[in-house]
Length: 276
Image (cartoon, rainbow, N blue to C red; front, side):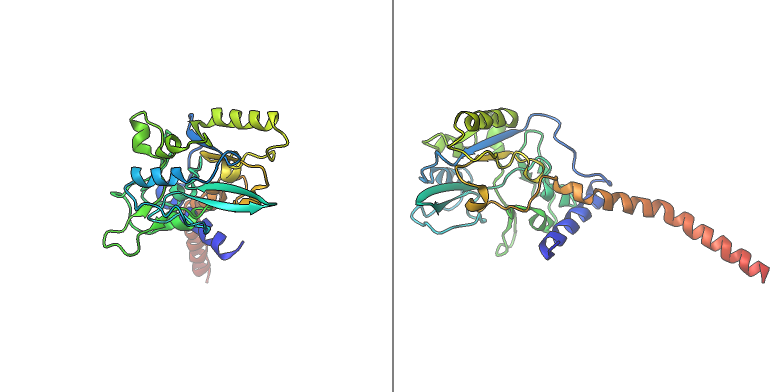
């Protein structure tokens, strides 16, 4: 376990201990909304970036910049270009909206929150500014406004306000190639599997996000292995809150047994003194 993984586990464990009463984050109980990104269809027009900026009132993206970029407080989604075997592949990046998000489990006050619809949102009226969510995220997504007098955590919220109105996320409507498909997660996995089954030579036989980090709301198809497209390889398939279960149970056990141990020790010492 490296330093970053240690900090992640610690942040999630602390959040779970304080905010979740000794339990990991609850498992998926209903149909979450999700998004399927078919990278074989993306032409890199970055219309999704532009739409995201407009919906979220962010600065307009520099559409002429081809350098690899990370999401930021001013860009909740970015599209990066990869050149592999003389082939250009474009990959959209944003919050993965995990089924059991590490950021929400690490949050002491549930400011980072997994909604029943699926989006993971940040609630500013609850946030303490501890930034454990940033440490916990296996995809390095939440960003903090360090230079603001009233700093916020910034990230894609899956256009949750639009979803509540029955509208689709802004990026979906803007995509001219239908590289983005919005729907329930179950439907999207079926579509992805069907595409792989019908086009076995076009896609690698892997739906990124189906199992990674316990499953994500955002799912990807690609023609090359995902590690070549900058996707993290070490997130595993276990939901991150699960890593802290035994730790949390151990803490509860210690609190339960420690008083009995002290009482027994006190009585034993008292008898020893009386014997003297």
